Image (cartoon, rainbow, N blue to C red):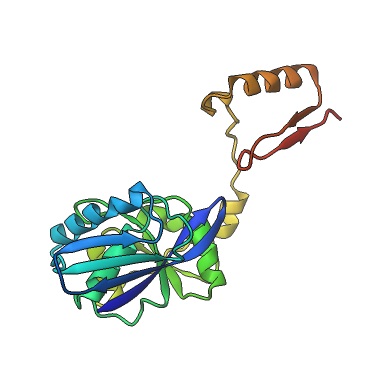
Amino acid sequence: MLARVLSAAVSGIEAFPVEVEVNSGWGDTIVVIVGLPDAAVKESRDRVLTALTNSGFKVPMGRTTINLAPADVKKEGPSFDLPIAIGMLSANDQLMSDQLDNFVMVGELALTGQVRPVKGVLSIAWRARAEKRTGVIVPAENAAEAAVVDGLQVIPVENLRDAVGFLEGEIKIPPAKVDLSRVFDQAYDEEIDMAEVKGQESVKRALEIAAAGGHNLLLIGPPGTGSRCWRNG
């Protein structure tokens, strides 16, 4: 049986949709992940199978093929653990839900089935709203971040069974809410500390000299490092 679960990935600060397609068929018991996965995504196979077992679900028998579409974009990180697990359960009739097309989901799975936080949830929530999805299913620790996006149901889950129960309608999970006015009015007194920058000793030295002397400064680097121009006055 074929199942499709909606997820997303982040490139820079922008998120793009990823469809997690799971097909369960005949043959030797094996799980294959395709769609340009990196090492962390490939390792999700072992995390997901163990999390399924420890959460009380059956590990699918036969050949399970997981495709992360679009296949020509590299997928990175452990955030696909949760959608892969949900897809495997749906493909093997252990989860029956008509909500899979309405929610984008991300989350790393611990071997116990607990859902751990991931990076880029704010961008993913923005993308989900742009795609006109009902909401996102995210780790509980990421819920406040995602809830900043208005007009989107943010469903926090603590573990895999919570996600399954919500999708099947057996568990009611109130959407996470945040007070936006309080968030944006909050003052931050944290100072930028160059000790947090790893390496780049020559660059930090140049910044110190420019700041001390009130000089202009132009930083140029390869794509991804960005560029900055500081001008005195």
